[in-house]
Length: 408
Image (cartoon, rainbow, N blue to C red):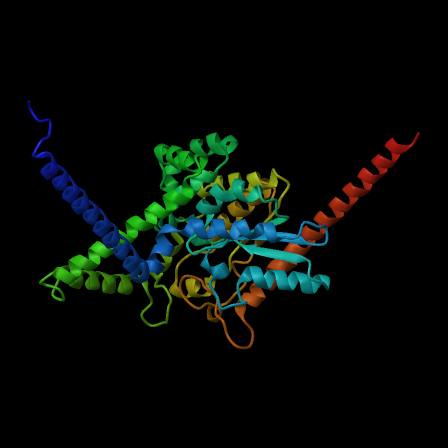
């Protein structure tokens, strides 16, 4: 009788167990290595990752705090749009905080809750796409900071945020697609992809994936640099240094601290020095974003940021006629879309600016951000008071209507 027992079966089972153990160890080791690399990259690259990969997360997290705003009629909510000139100051000196403090002081009681949705490098493109998302939170007023630099292609090239187009609501999407989206560094496929990501609730996962890709890319760069036998003698490093020096000589005024040369100012201001066309791509997006807010009953105050025209004049660049045409077109776009407009571009003088980018100087006696926020508060106060009067009148009419219906 033939035995059914296979003498090699035990060997095969032992071999399978060893194979399973081996590949399990490989998987665990790979996971630990990947986790370690990710953690190391997080520590070494955190600032740049936050700047490049998570700007829309910063804005979104800020907006998600709006639920803290009291809903009773004694309080008003304000959302600030803007770049780093709005928010990048020492604690307590950011323009949203100061503007709210000024408004409460004018009214004699705390009645304003301000929320900063400002983020470094954010401007017309970012907030034009986010307007629908912000409107869904129903703030009383949106204060939208603009600067001349935001209208340039150089700004868009540096600060594009294609993922934010996913937040555009479907009813406004045909209008966005009809715009010259290539000027926003977008294509139709970008728009459709980002819309799909947001509609499927995957924008957080997508942001994490982009962030992780950048962390690993940086770790690869660090590893290549560490293993390079020619480290410290790389010719491309010297070429990069020379390019940087050449950029400084061309764009910066070497006789003044942190100021552009005439060439640098022309690059910085771009076509705004010649005057924007009425159909400029950024103006189209600005109009669309404002209408998305005002169409939902939200008041909008657009203000043009203080600009160092003193230094522009010092460089000899011709700017008066072109910049005024630009200001007129921005004003027209804002007001025709239902917003209020405040022009502050000539408010400050050269010593009031900290750098060429337009950040305000902070001193121990009288900070420039306080002066700027006071002007913004003066413009915002009548808008908010008019809103209160309109709501009070609506309540009285509703009460009268209710009383008439209750009469026999």
